[in-house]
Amino acid sequence: MLKYKFVLSAYAFALALTAVGLVAPAVAQIGPPGGMIYAHDMAYKTVATPTDLPNHGNFDAIYVLGEGFAPVSEVAPGDHGYNGGRWEVRIVTFTGASPMQYTNTEDIMAAAARGDIEIGDVVKRFQCPLVRN
Image (cartoon, rainbow, N blue to C red; front, side, top):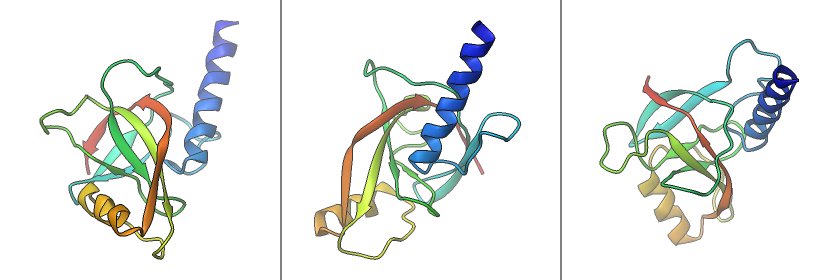
């Protein structure tokens, strides 16, 4: 029964990540889903772990830009205040500009201030590492 619950949890986690655009459909892939995330104009690899964390403790933001674009993190390993890969997912909606790949949060915040994008509330909390590409 425990093995069945784990498989269902892993399947649900992969579907949730696919829904927010963090990874390509990964249900049929062997091993955990992964992808790429930008932070400070640098690309990082990631391995998504099947976690769904409650709203307790410290988290860093990941901004999901939509299909075809890599998410952007506000911090990276080695930054002061980096919370070890504990993330809050926020969806970015393009409202006044064409969708584009951002690679740092300063540009995302500037676009939000101009009205080019809207940043949504937290939709998920999870844990995964960032590894320099």
